[in-house]
Length: 164
Image (cartoon, rainbow, N blue to C red; front, side, top):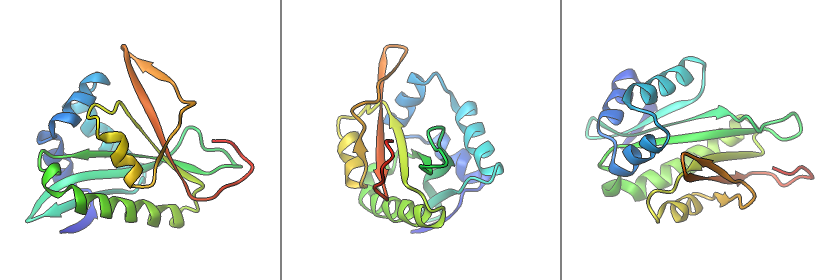
C-alpha cells in the first residue's frame, strides 16, 4: 500500500465506489457525486493537504485537512474528512493505522492544537473507530440537519487554557 497526493482519477474512483455508509451519509447531507467531488478538488486546489491510499493500483480512500471554522489565534485547529471505497472493510486496520499516523504528522507540520471530524455515525461502529484514531466525542456539540444528528469528534494535541 502507498499514500500519495490525491489525483483527479483517485478522487473520481473513490466517489464512484463509495461504500454504503459513505453513500448514506452523503445522502443525509443532500450531497451527491458531483458535490462531493467538487468539494475534494476545490479543497486540494486551495492548497489543503489531500491524500489517497492505494492498494494494487486502486485508491481505497481519500482524505484531507482544512483549517477549521472553530480555529482561532488562541487555538489552532483543522477539520479532516474521509471518503472510502466499498473495499474499506477489507483494509480498515491498515487504513486506521495510516490515518492516525497521517493526522499526527499533519498536526506537527501545522502546529495544531486539535483536529476535528463531523459524522452522522450511520454505522454504530463509527464512534468507536474515531476513538481508535484518538478522537473524543464532543458532548457539547449538537447539530441536527434534516432530522439527523451529526456528531463532532476532536483529537487534541495540546491542552491549554482555551476551550474547544
